[in-house]
Amino acid sequence: MTGWATIRLVAHRELRERFRSRVFRGSTIVGALIVALIIVLPNLNSDKPESYDVGLVGVTDPVIAAAVANSGPAIGADVIRVHEISDVARARADIRTGVLDIALVNGRSIIIKNPLDSDRIDARYRLVAAVSEASRLQSALTDAGLTSEQAAKALSAPPLAVEALGRPKADTGDQLTNFIGVIAIFIFFQQYGSWILVGVAEEKSSRIAEVLLAAVRPRQLVAGKILGIGLVGLAQALVVAITAIIASRVVGADVLKGTEGLAALQAVGWFALGFSFYGWAYAAAGSLVARQSDAQAAGFPISIPIFVGYFATVSSLSSTEPSSLVRVLAFLPPTAPLCMPTLIAAGRVEAWQVALVVVTSIVASIFMARLAAAVYSSAILRTGKRIKWIEAIRAA
Image (cartoon, rainbow, N blue to C red; front, side):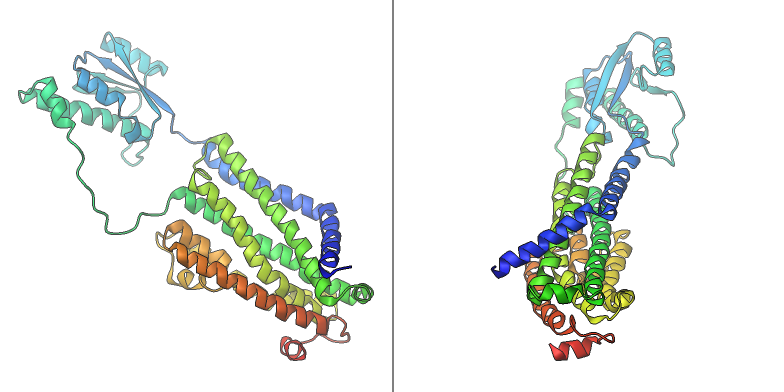
């Protein structure tokens, strides 16, 4: 049997065991539900309607009517429907019953149902401001002696050119997608790294590894285990990502629209890239222990850069600019999968820099694979006491 065939056989064994596990199925369902709730809940109580109905009482100027009807994009509404109302009494009645949202009377006053709160600038507040501005400017120009055509021409002047000295701010959808992705990557690193760590330690302490190594080479055994568990993690990450995409489509959320959908798939790629590094490291750590109960202590040094990258990224998400620490950690292979997505979402990194980090991460993963395989080979059959990292590396 060839080396690759042996690795595939071991990986298939891991896939079969993990997919049958209740822990895997339960964590997949819980993870997908949590992501779906994060996307769905903020949209359940949204008070921004898709359309507004505006009544016009005694408004004879077609320019004002057109300006009101075209004010939708300025306030974030899909449609502004304009209705000709015969008198003020009818307009008041329609507003009370909810047929109309607001009414413009003679181009001089506006009727609304509830008073506006200046501390809460919502879509209704912006609608009143837009209708008031359109009518006020048109009426002022007409009062100054201009005809309706002249006033319309004056108001249709092209906007001024705007020169931006800095980069655009990060999109809110990108930031939220990045936040979800970082949390998912962190959880998956911890969960699947622990599976490899405990799995290797269990095989060593129970002497199962000795039986397996009678037919399989050490490098093939550990490579198959990492590949199998990595594919399980990738499958779970894809399930969560697909759930997020479906949830965002169903509720019409801003998350995962346009570039945010690509960001979700990028998060899966960063997980795969990071796991190829940490999977080997956790396997080497598991081979160092004599008892399964010592596995977590052996794996603690490996989890340190994961925690550092995670907390640096999370603390930086609330600010408009990524911190200097995140900018540095984003270019280091152990922390890049957690920090680089933040720079990408904020638009603070060039494409060639992302490519450089990907290449260096792949090189670092290859180096870690060679080192971890050597450590695993020299330590997996050594029993009696826990082996120190320095001792294992020297022996390798």
